[in-house]
Length: 129
Image (cartoon, rainbow, N blue to C red; front, side, top):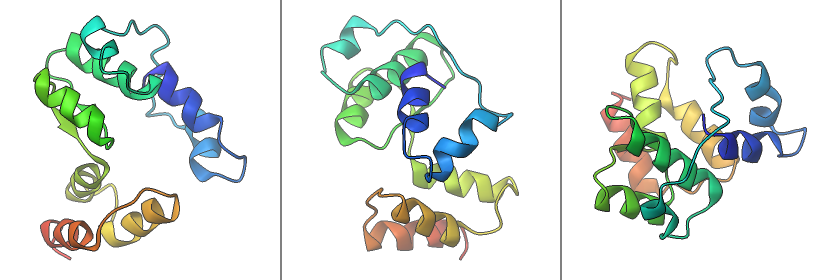
């Protein structure tokens, strides 16, 4: 996980579940030295998006997990493969990491990420729910 993303998540309120759980997550690998690629820097994205895209660009076979529309446009332009939160939830269910995407989708919405009702229905359909 890019340092800027780590900082964004852990800087949240102490009542935020992600801020509490990330420092203890054994699966989270923190990458502290990320040089933002100049091609990505020219897009003027946020620090987290810029670092995530730069990591994926320099590591063939990696996917950038981004939901921000401008970051997705940048990734498409530079041929960086991406996954969004919804796709990640579907993969988690298929791998048996979560039993249902419905509860996870609601948690994501409750945390403030906007997902249209149409997208939610599509995600549930693709997850077999």
